[in-house]
Image (cartoon, rainbow, N blue to C red; front, side, top):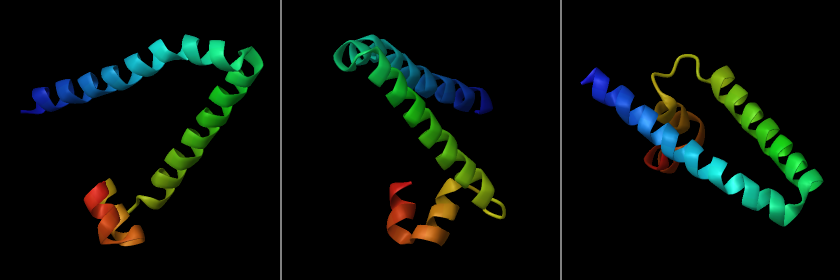
Length: 80
């Protein structure tokens, strides 16, 4: 059971990272080197900011869905 959950997590991460890494050269070609680097840096900062918010406000909740339910309401619980 636990082994299959870990395998599932790694498979999902591999799919997400693999497809985005394959698209990066095409995105840099379309936007140019300077704009591409700026966009990657901006998206990285945005991801860092949102993950730090989640970590800061997640104390006392059993999972991310419970935190969404508390702060954003029932619709966010269904989406998360």
